[in-house]
Image (cartoon, rainbow, N blue to C red; front, side, top):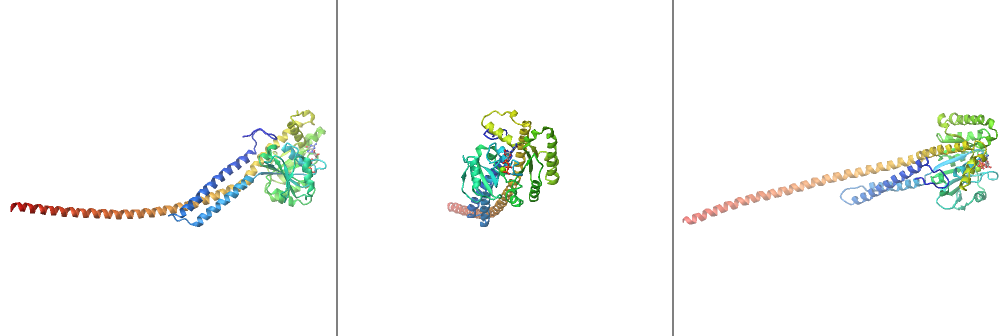
Length: 418
Ligand code: GTP
Ligand code: MG
């Protein structure tokens, strides 16, 4: 059920598709695991008995058993992954904070994201960070703390810091969503390594664009590269900083239409990853800053006054809301497909092989039973032979005794006559 907890929507989220599928997968594999375990024990037991079981068969079953364990562990680790890209200062870190409903990642002047930061949930009560290739945990109780930890390592831009943040603080983290922040796409001419390291297992990409300028070639090129490596990546475009458009209301509609046209053209024609109709659900006009500020106010139980924000605040909030819903739908569906399809196939294969093995043993035991039956019949008929033999013998005896007694009777009668 969906209990109203801090940091997210109360209504059932589309992300449940993933958690439900994961739960189901887990149940199925636990059952399969139990079945295989039972079958192994059974085969071992009977292999010492009358039914001939090939020991290779038992070995094979045991191997399947260990495979299932591996898959169950993988299912438990499976998550939904979303990666954020865009030019420096477009608001990537702010968008992530807005989605997590808390200022978790450093953002703004002096807080340029200089390497990849992966935010994922932990059951521990306090957040901590880990740099790539090290088991050392940096305690992270505040943003300042994280900034400090990030600046310590002198990490390359393509390296990774994993930020484990308490699940109970964020809805998305509770639902197994992993969010990856990146350095500005304009800081390096060579993003191939980024794609290899961070994009190949991503379920959704969010391009954080700046609505105060047009989509840059650097941003487009990056996604062109991604789509050569991944067939039909799921790309959402957030035209962020849309609150700034309120400064020039006379151009607002015009600017919006221009952005929308170009974004749609990019998704449908240039990248060719999606139809026109679908693309309309992939482009949004938002202000991450406002979403974050609103969430922070609500957390402090302060009253949110829309009048305190630039014109169009409610529409931007609404657009962000729609974005989140469509994003969650897309994310969970894609993750179920990419993460679980393979496991399902593996599970099916194991179940199939198991069935064939047991079928074989069953046939063998049927054969043995038939042989035993034949044996039984033969023995029975032997017994029958013996009994009939006795019967005929006894008939013989009877006749002989009869004859004797008749003879004796006659002799007695003869004796009287004398
Ligand atoms: P880098 O990590 O340097 O690549 O930048 P970034 O894309 O992560 O941007 P960041 O989130 O650090 O935001 C840059 C600045 O833009 C910050 O001062 C934010 O407060 C501000 N900002 C982010 N989103 C919005 C928005 O929607 N509206 C306005 N007005 N400012 C925003
Ligand atoms: Mg950043």
